[in-house]
Structure formats: C-alpha cells, structure tokens
Image (tube, rainbow, N blue to C red; front, side, top):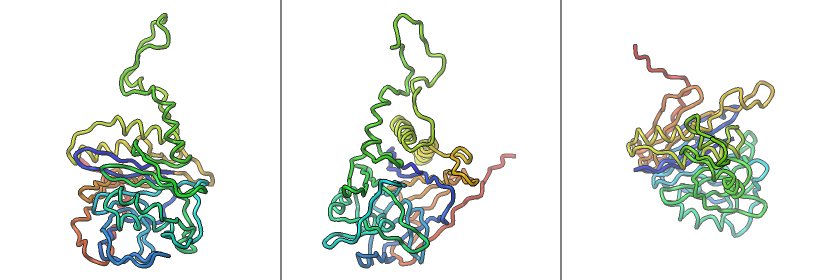
Length: 324
C-alpha cells in the first residue's frame, strides 16, 4: 500500500510513500542520457532524458518505483491489486511491460502533455522481468508543474484520468476515489460553526474540530482522503527547506507504523521509505522507516551524458544529531 502526492511552491515537488512488509533491495539510481534501455518488445532506447529515482536494479536495469526526469516530469507506480489488467502483445501497438513503463515515459516525455500523446497507442503487456520478479499489479501517477494524470490499465482498456487533487493511493479505481471526496466536503481547516441546532448551545472546545470526520485508518480510501485534505490545505514558504519539510509533513500524515497493519506470521506493513523530489532542480530527497533524517542526491552533480548508472545505497540506519 502506498501514497503519492504533488506539491507546488516556487518549485514543483513530487514523491510518495512505499508501504510494504519487506524491501526488494532499494537504491537511488541515476540513469544518464546514454545508458541504454532495452525494452522487452520496443527495441533499445539508446538516448533519452536523464532520470533519478528509487529502484531495484536488476542486471544493470533500474526497475523504478518512482522517478523524475531532467525535464521536470515525475512518475510513480502504486499497487492496484485485483483491478490492474495487462494484455498480451498486440500488433500495431506500443507494447510496454509494466516494469518498464516508467522509463518508457520519462525517457521521452518532457511534459505530461507529451505523455498523454503516447498513451492511446500503448499496450501494457502481461510480462514479468524474470522468474524471481513476478508481474506487479499497478496504476500510475504522472505529473509536472502544469498537470497531473492517473493511468490505469483495466479490463476495459487503458484509462487516463485528470487528477486535480494530485494524490494517488491504491484501490479502488481512481474515479471512485475522487467521487468519495464528496462525502467529506464539510471538512475545513477552520473552526466549525454550530449548524446542528440553534436551540442548543454547542461550542468548540478544541482546536482542529473543523476536520472532525477526517478518516484516520490505514485503508487506501482513507489515506486518499487524508492526504488530499492535508495536501490541499498545506501552507509553506517558498524556500527549499520549507517546501521539502512541508512535503514530508504531508506524506507523514499517511505513514504506517510497525504493528498497526498486521499481515500475520509476524509480518507488518510499514512505510519503507518516503520520497520528495524537487522536479525542477533534479534533487531526490528521502527518509526511511528507521532513518528520519532527510538524505538527498542531486542528479545534476553527476555526468548526465554518461552511460553507466549512478547507484547510491539507501541510508537506513537512524542518524541522531546529539546537541551536547
């Protein structure tokens, strides 16, 4: 289970939480412009936009969970189990496996507008990377500073939704998630007024009562509502530090704590990592479950005209600043 969000101050920010009971071995990977992507059915992309993101690297191939490219486009795949539907290879279509969808888009699209133009001829193929890595059932958020869309491959075909809230979680399908926000239109960051009855002397006895009814459980529907409310009402300054801090607070509202989502057999779903990307500057910030100190990697400090991947281990051990 995961949550993705966007945020705009002076710069555009994009990121997500990845919630799971284990890690496949994540690392931050920078793919320079001349690192070849060998697609399963679409040949080799020798040259493309550079990108940075969290990935599991298999055979020098970065299998991105989320990433941004040098043009400011961000993309993330989130679990969509039971609803995702992929097809067999189809003649006359761009046949792209789900595991390569992110580099397929980020490698050649400088905007969401350009990504929209790719999607009508795209067929997401039911193909695993190898025997160890089964096909992941996902849907995707694609965003830039101008617009956000959600892409879902379901039995009816590839669905593309405008995403005005700039948030994505898991099931149900995105259009149903958006519809459910109607149930919460009475929520407000301001203190409520008494509309219950003018014959009763009701009053506010605590700050924050305008948000009474905001769901607090860990289900994907509730996380969607909570993240949307927090994101749409978040206020911060325009500086990098203020913006990044606020973004982590937004996604912090949906973090999962070990023990609260029991999967049985001693397994618990937790927030493995939280990312925040400055899509304008190409900086990937992240924290992990065990390390709350923000780490950052700037892809523009590397040679983006190279061929070899730049790979950085995830800093998982807690780092505490001792003041005395």
